[in-house]
Every structure is written in C-alpha cells, then in structure tokens.
Image 1 (cartoon, rainbow, N blue to C red):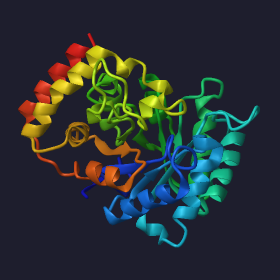
Image 2 (tube, rainbow, N blue to C red):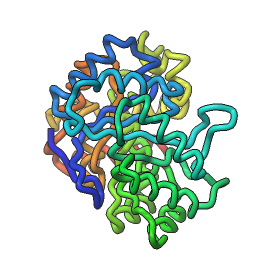
Image 3 (cartoon, rainbow, N blue to C red):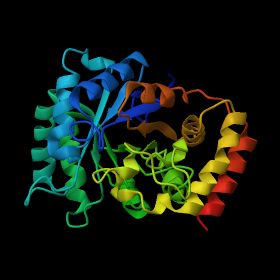
Length: 314
C-alpha cells in the first residue's frame, strides 16, 4: 500500500482509505465490520474516515471499540461535524465545534483526532467564528489538522486568505469517473494552497464495480436494493449510465485490473488526490480495492474511459 502526503501536513496517508458511511455501526453487523477493520491493518491501510453523524455516533463508537489496543500512531483518524446530531445540535458554530469534538473523542476513545473536517459549509455561522474555533481545537491538542468536505470554491478561498487561523490541509469531495465536478475549481484551488483531496464515492456508490447491469434487477444484498443505503443512487442507476459502465470493463481488463481497481486508479492518477475512501462490508472486498494502490495504467485507457463516461452524462 503506497502512501501520499496529506496537503501541507506531515501526515502520510494510504492511497486507499477506509470509510464508515452506511457501514460501521449501522449497515454491517459488528463481527464482520471488525473483520474489515482488521483486514485494513493487514493491507497497510492506515487512514480511517468517519463522522459524528454516521449512525448518529454509532460509527464512531464502533471504531472506538475496534481500534482499542492498537498503537495510536499506527493509524490516521479523521472525523467530521456539521449535520444535525439532535434538534438543536448542528452546524459549525464555536459552541458546536467544542461540543461535537469532545463527544467524538469520547466515542472514539482517543485524546485527539488527526484530521477534523467540516462536513459541509455552514452559511448560518460566520466563517471567522468557525475558523477561530477550529484553530483553538488545534491549539488544544485535540486536533492535529483540519479539513472540509464539499465547500464551494469561494468559501475555500476565503478561508485560505484569512490571517491568523489554522490552515486547511484536506478537501473531501465526491469524485469519480461519473462525477468530475471538483476538477473545475476546487482541485486547482486546493492544489495551489497545500490542500489535498480525500475523495468519497470514487466507485460511484458501487456502480463502478460493474455489478449493476442495465435493464435488470439489482442483485440481492447490494446497496441498490437497500432502503437504508440505496437512497442516493437514482441518477447512477439510469440505463445509459449502466451501459457506459459496462463499456468500461474491456478497458479495465486491458489494464489487468478489475473495474473497481481501474476506477480507483483513475482518481489516484491526480497527484492532488491523497486518498480514495472506500466502504466495505467484507474483508475480501477491501482487499480487492486496496490492490488499486500503485497500479500503472496506460493514460490512453483513462482517456477512453473518460470519453465513455462523459457521453453517458450528456
């Protein structure tokens, strides 16, 4: 497993990272989820990403138990705040940063997180207040570095230009062959300012594994058949998208990779991408994805894949 530097930080993170949205503490039973975490360490995946809102704290609680006893410097732990945790607890106010950070640390069973991320931009809180609160969190030793997820370019720029505050080292956007929006403004802006991408949904909710065929019912047990997990997949399950994905399979085969590995290698082709977050419900699924790290792919195959994917979204 290769590692990359995370922005201007001194963190070295695995090219493939383990996510916990819709899996740990909610969608996957505990013993199997623990086996996935164990497999991650076996594969030398050192970066684990979660959020307070995943399972309303359940994912963090699970990870706190699963990581217990492992040396704290053997993994890089990231969590987030913003989304509602109760009727009154949400957003990025100074009070919420302090409250939600302490609650996350308690659930995770650790004194600090390596990366604390703003899960979205909070238009109801002045940016100055949020940045000052995050700066205090770093000064306290409870947070090593800070990041954000899905912030608009103008807000990223405003934070970068703010004096006297801690600087962001990471951005967590949705990014895949089927969703390339960050290439427009976010990635160039971040690359110029010491901010790396940690991309989520690099396999487009599993669609880029090729397991969903156009005109057929999704296989039982897959995310698309789950009421809990499949609610975000409507756009991706259109026949024209699924047909395009099937046309990507020969390109992956020519590269000597599974389609999932090919799709992960595609996001990692960008040097500003430090890591691709994958979710896994089985250890063998994680092992397959991890094999994308370090894959050497002819750029002509990537160019053809981009052409096919772009045609499906027009």
